[in-house]
Image 1: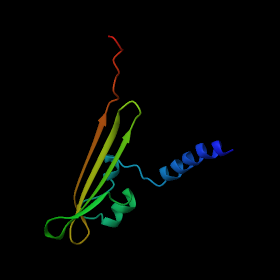
Image 2: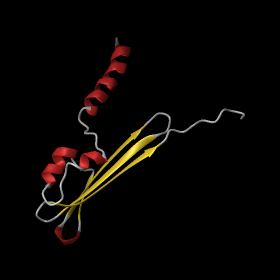
Image 3: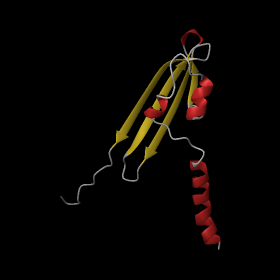
Image 4: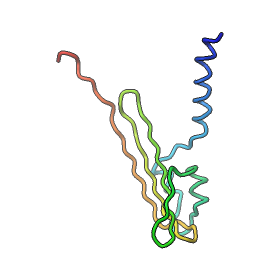
Length: 110
């Protein structure tokens, strides 16, 4: 019984945490509009940012980063950076998606 608990409990925890993470990609950013979208809109759409910093002239720069890795060595990374003016309205948006193909193992002795 203890063996089952030690195997099942981590799986349940992972599934519960996975439900808390919002997947992000560059398509998601298209829902935010320069000049009208607010910091609250971005947080509602993307969740809490990975980092926050003060930009020039009282602006705020929010950044979201998301990575996924595949057992074979491939994966993807998404970085979203949004700049908001002192009034909290979106000034600039930038997004990049990077996909890394899985590694192909060469046959031994080849």
